[in-house]
Length: 398
Image (cartoon, rainbow, N blue to C red; front, side):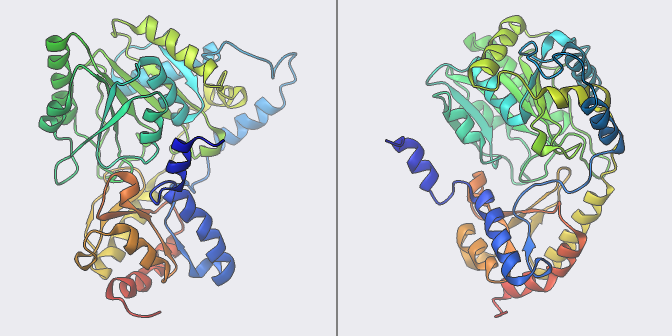
């Protein structure tokens, strides 16, 4: 018998809306032609990986060393872990060693292993809204509760709200910067304030919540913005990330976990995360791309195409009369549902389909009344959607 809990989730209207839109888009393109369908449903990066990555792929593929494709230590190859430690040291401004890194099957695998390592059944995980839809399922995988925390009107962190929701049951707070779906980057001041709140809570209760930093979009920023470091300000911080977005490798499922070397229980954390890697069925991160990334993790990338498309899609929204939050990073535009739709984002995104526009409803991100546009698509699609959006908002028949 199928799990009734899983069955209920799978059949709920909000579940898997992004993937459902993606699949529906393929059918619409077949029916109307790809150039007549404006698919902004899924964050599938369309820039090609850097040339260095292709070169290293060929080099690794030609390696016929005995046991080249055999098992390795569960946390990954030492040289790859050392490379990720170097990367994190640069980003966090704190010296990190390879012993603090566990290679993972993408950021999703990294988050699940991290949660498995720190959660006791019945614990709480705080998540500022809106947030990536799958977070809820990841937390529920381990018998914990999602505590949704309101952000400010501009979607920056509201540390007073976070403080109100902290309790003895709080195992972690999970933040994503740049944020999916808003494109918001949390400032250094916000991160410092958050770290202070968590430190004060730890002193008062004796339990330090982990600060989980989900950062697959860290490199994709605009307008001179940068992503703040947390390691210098809070011992119980951990980075979970991947190379899906910055190197355009989402299908390779390669990422890592890095625990703050100052964490008092870092050794126990690493052991627990390695155990989770084994018992959740990953066993280890893909060996092939560990070898690829050990020398190409810092390959130069040009994200100016995403910035250009951001500006283009904002122009389309201005023309259509839609309100939105200006993205500071990633490749998503967070758009307000028109006032006459009474915040019904599910109905409005269904309405957009009549004009061959596919967008993800905000309810799937704990953001009712909004919808998400993924602009990691062709410029032609963005530009050609202009009249379709205008007609949809004005309710003009096609």
